[in-house]
Length: 351
Image (cartoon, rainbow, N blue to C red; front, side):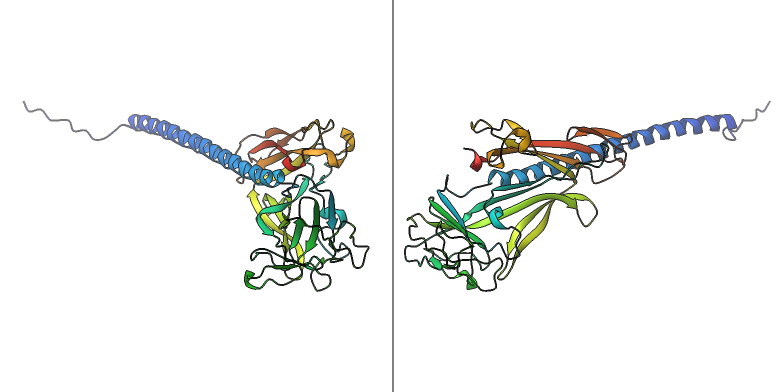
């Protein structure tokens, strides 16, 4: 008797459906793992970028604010400013002499909106550009350095001997950086220009000729005047960023030049620290001197709070709540946000 062999002709429909279901389950699990890993990676990556940007921003701000009021000397018995404040300039009058200038952005229109960002302006002398004044100088309108200097026409400079300090504008051309003379005459096309060539304590812009100062000590030096303003505004890509506006000069003009430092800084709020008992440390933090019962001359520190946000959106699937400037806000744009705060001491303003 001959047996016929049964040949397998394929899978049944039920077997095929079971296999498809198992494959779909495995595929769904793999996709879910991939999506979860991608979300986690994206959030961690954006958080790392956000923290890195915050560190850069705090470092930039801290470096300049710690230098506020630096002159190379502890105190001066007299300060003269002969810059002609009647001309167009970024500063006017006593603003050239102020080490810090705080601008409160104001209050928010409602409790659900962020307040406008604050601004801080800081001024100090550049310790890396010093001209030691030679004794063979003419105090009436120019100085001689003991070596060739790197100052250029139009720059705001300060001459001091740790007893008297004078702020003026260099009015001569320094061709090829190969001369040692610094002129502080009046007239010419420089802006703001000098209202007088006299640099004595009795000189001011109400006098036409000013008074010569003939008591410069042996340690008389000339340094570059630096001024920076930190502010928050949108960049060319409509992203909020931290900017530093620097004092920029040319042969016949002076102005401020903006430089973007860190992207992703959405808001900046500051509180001034007032030393009310003259012990060298801040006793009261406020954005106004009156609330601390103090004056701006008693400021020794500043507390800076930065609201950082991720560059990419749709990072967080749910609305994110955060506390900033004493209020709770809720963001629904899917961006990651985090607040960073640092307290910075004005080392040169501490008594």
